[in-house]
Length: 255
Length: 346
Image 1 (cartoon, chains in turn purple, cyan):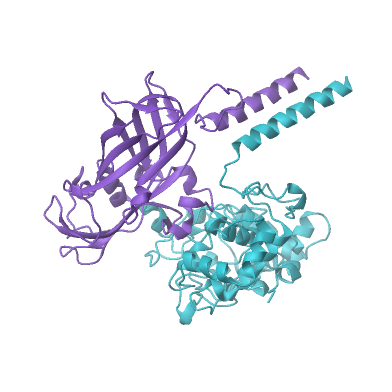
Image 2: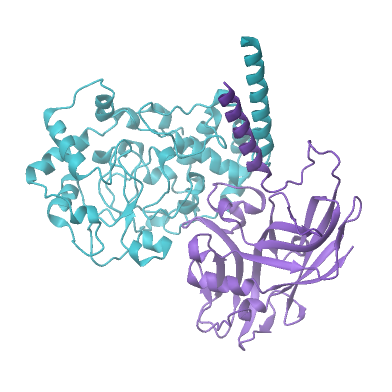
């Protein structure tokens, strides 16, 4: 009987550990003393240093001309680092940023424990778990057109357009969550001397500069005459995800 | 003593319940209690692979899923439904067609497999490209050679339909008609397609004997076939090259994994109801069961990529083939193909 109670406690502890692995941001019934605030992550899209616009000709670092008609990507797994170095994880939430909607580039994060934070990290893409968990809702609803039907999994980033250097329409559908071709890009920004101050009332803004030009020559220069379409997970998607990882740069915070 | 034990287990249960509720993702609608769940797994089957806690089968959800399965509204020009290529009388396969035809008669490239015991399936399609039953319908809906429609348009048609919004609320409670609800309903219908009442099942349960030739066939099956088509689902869910070709027009599993070693591998299909699901193999090249069995006797490619179990298999005689066929016919589940629950509701 003692053994049984021990087992129950162990199971319960395991269950609790399973759901508090990421410190949740819903008010904690065991700790009513923690207070919460919020902040906004704002993504400012640019190309070669000027505000990015769809359907506009740009020149890439490799000299190709590109006009982008569609740019959409997922941001998820947002975490903030406290002064003591520990990381706080936001409740699992998935944001679908669409360059055609400025509102979609303003990511509201609520229920953040009041504190000063010195760094942020997030994922461009969708963690592997949600790629094999069946039908999802909200930003992850398959009707958003960011899910491969024949090879289950999310398209993390979609960039489509045209280029005179490419023989065909430019269609980069980047994703893949398995093994060596996992294509999520984890972005880390240290705020330097700045701090993100979460208070009970303010809604501070963390500005991140999203350099779309880096998609074409971040870590590996892309020549659109040799690669202008990716439609599945694999080596090419993985390669481009290393460029995506260089697209995001911390700019400033408005506390 | 007894009282305190009961009190303690109640407290424990409440605590565990609290933990479970606290863990529930908030994007999942609170389902009706388990009380109205109607899925009942056969006693001689293993635990299901599908997790019913997220989407328990209820009577209104199943009825809605059945209606969607038979409704051509899912295709772009409202000409075909799921049931067009998955017909109950053929254990939900396509009745003699090597490859199925989508809207406007467009031919696909693979044979339409039977649909049953999907709650135990780990992946879907011949190449296993689909990793969850709930997202399985997205492939035929969006494939140009099948329904050639977008999910967004299907959802739009359903939301504007005179009947469907009410059926969705009856099944899932008040709220938006989301793609998740649509896919949950189709999963409920498909999960209920359980085939577990063939003569072989009744033999396993000690309810009836099999003919002598079938018993001989069973012995041969167990020594030659069950390495891949393992009891009781008659598949081990793996992907293998069963010696069809040396050069592959269809990369099969390799198309999904991008691994050279997976080229030409296809999912080991269940052999339940196999006498009803001709023609055979991923491209439907073998017109009948005896031709398919003869492949394993005289037709193997013996290529380097052919599965090791076939390279090392003991030879089969012509009599073995006949007896194997008699045994395989004992896997036909007549109550499944005649079950009024699965019939066209229109």
